[in-house]
Image (cartoon, rainbow, N blue to C red):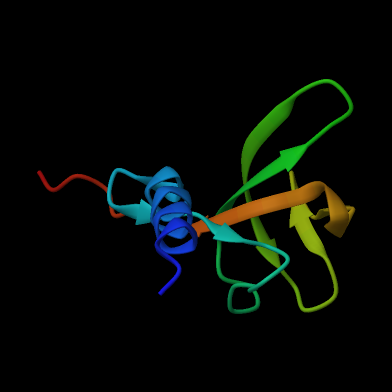
Length: 84
């Protein structure tokens, strides 16, 4: 068994977990079409997190404006709101 590889994968998975919700690599998996999700994308100067959805061809953000797919790095399902 390659324990170094297993440990590296475990560390990577831990790094993707935030508040019990997992970020998904956008190059590996895409969300269900038209389901709202959070996306993390890299701009020229800064990384940003926005709400968006995958329409089947591209990512759509900010009032139906498409964004280049290669700028999206990760996405995650919207977390459940706190209960009253």
